[in-house]
Image 1 (cartoon, rainbow, N blue to C red):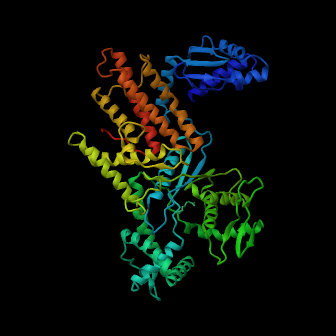
Image 2 (cartoon, rainbow, N blue to C red; image 1 turned 120 degrees about the horizontal axis):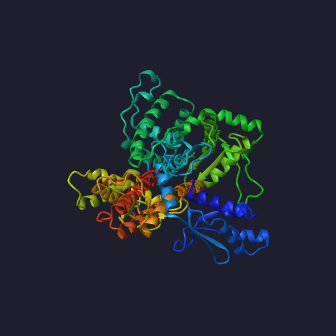
Image 3 (spheres, rainbow, N blue to C red; image 1 turned 30 degrees about the vertical axis):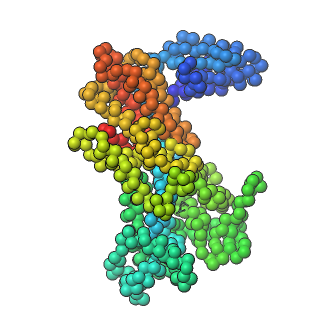
Length: 584
Ligand code: ARG
């Protein structure tokens, strides 16, 4: 149970004993950490209910808590605030118990819900670029956060593998390699040996074909025709399409692996195709589908709308399916295969209208039960120093791989400049710093906000950065190494200094930070808490001379805290998808 919940229960019982509503007993962390650790402001709500001065109500409740050994101080201050400080024994006991818990005191869901997370969303045959970064980073962190709170997760990359981009690439390949077996009239799928193609050439072909289609109408028509043939199951194009997916996905996996991002399913939009007939049936049966300017649409506007929500288009006038059709059909697949309680889409905030339409249509049509949560977690853009979406120096679209390498080079330079022992695996350390820099720099911001990527700031070893957290853990590693493993077993029975007490309090409140981050779907809460914890550790480290302390009990207690901070910080990093380093 969280520490504020334990205290809330105590206060609620005290209010109830005095004949007041137990609901007045809500305890929160203190606004004034210099005065107390926790506070309860319930007496003010009580004043309205019982027409009594809040101070009197607070004093009644506080009197009931006298003699509670868990509480060091319960004080009524001002007009009726109750300030609470817990006893050191209670604090130590709480920390000990949280550390012994496999979930480190993170409150676990009562019902182990299943949450599907749809993130990544790359498009086959188009190079992964900087625009794909945030979905991957935020989605991965949310997945880990959902798991940390005791829920099951299913992650699906939801590849864009079915649209015109496939036709463009295949039409261009056909012009360049008309001799390929897959283009022959008498194509024999059984004996297809594949094609001579790699990710690098695919990455250049798409931009080329896309530009060509804008100038050359014949080519554009051809690409459309190829797309249509693919979607109808033409064997030659299907075989080539599979090859392209295979090559492209292998390349994507490398990029995602570099960032510690992975998926349970590599489904694509094409996998939803077989559910489209069912989608159309359901929409028809419910009388939701109607014609509008040649297209088939479903109305999703609601009376309370402040902006116009246009109907969602299911079939265009040329009878082709579009993005919304795919997302709706995918919902049928997810309901069918996974029966999820929630589905979270981590997609650029600019797609907000699309998701509003899709979610409303899905609920209207009953594609998922009413109680299933469908959430779009939108995010802003990562910008360059000029405040515009991050670009290459030449002003082009930045490839994700190039971005990663730029940060990696800078990290390696830093690592090389520091005086590690020779056997340190510098490349491994640089890799971890790279991930920490990119991810923490992103996740520390509230998702919806745009932010400016500033390499020097994001990689700095002090400040609110990933490096600072890695550095804190490395410092603890070094302390514990010198102390030869002492501290691993938390068995302290006294608290000696204020900075130590503050740190114990931060440790004991960390579980609640995870619960809050989950409720708000906000990894930034984890970043902030990790930073607070690491900062409290710095203060503790400077105030107490751990390794030279002569009092053996004191020294052991401090080493205990070092080990505890490391464990708890590593949990934060794990949820953020960042790996710690041994030394730094
Ligand atoms: N491929 C899409 C894009 O590039 C993103 C997919 C997001 N997920 C979804 N279920 N719509 O914009």
